[in-house]
Length: 410
Image (cartoon, rainbow, N blue to C red; front, top):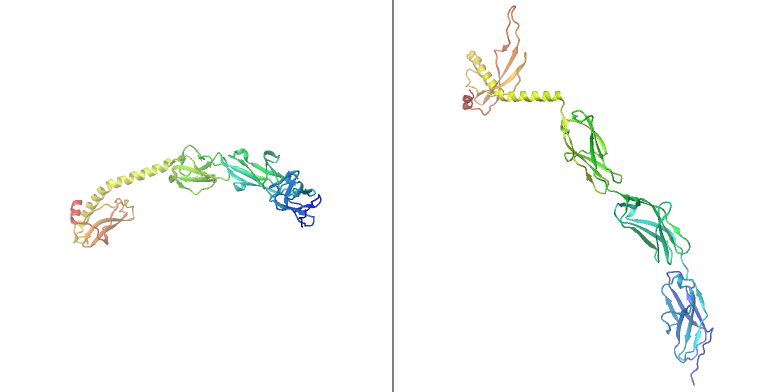
């Protein structure tokens, strides 16, 4: 028989939204439901969705559903759908109010980059304000100090925003906090401290003593000081570029002659070490000590020059003395000896002395030990000290002495 036409009247459609109370950032599915029983139609049905008299994309289509992948608070409004046939007969659903829910911001926090709020002067500082939850457009605000000096305000659809200081200065050392608001009132973060760290300046080394001239035994104070620099500052002291192992800002030094030379110090607070200029320290020896040292040096020099001559004369005299006792002396059968200087002080009265006479016999070397004593003179007579007539010789390892050396020495 002839085809039957389906007449669509107002109220024969119903629009539903899933979920019915959507949240910002979520998706919504709109469904246009046909309430009239199925009948023969003159062609496929077409559907279209509207919000506040505006056609929603993609317009007319054969699908009774439309999915909105992400909705926001401004997507709230009045929704309905329409249906039409090939004969252009149209039916409309009742309007449905859809209110997109906004989640208030919560758990606002402020973080610093670099972490910890420690930043070197001249470097970049970033203050990141974040929220744990919150939907829609969120307004972020940054404040400095306890009085809340507003630094910047940003509104964006995200859970975090950043405020930057390209190059921090000394005055940027302070406490900071931020606030976030998406329409339910601002939520505040906790205070965060920011410290601008300053590299140390070149330190100055000072040496403080009892007077203008430092002498052996004086106590001087070495002090190192950097005029600028964030604490803590570590100091080191150097003597002739060798570290003294001192780490305080100052220490006392008891002077010896070896303490003369250049001194310097170093300051370091982790942002780069700086070394001071070298400071000379001349330690003088007191006059009495200098005289003793000078006399000792002159004496040693004279003995070094005149000693061989004196000893040669002594050996020759000794040889003549020994010739008197040639018949009884153990040296009478020995070859001639060579005399070589040994730096020995003059013997004191009643004291034994040692002289290396270098008397060579075969593989043996003999040395002379003699003793001086004061004899008691008879009444009315005075006598000087003299060598003991007896001579004691010790056998020593043979030295490299030849007859030629002896002849030359004699």
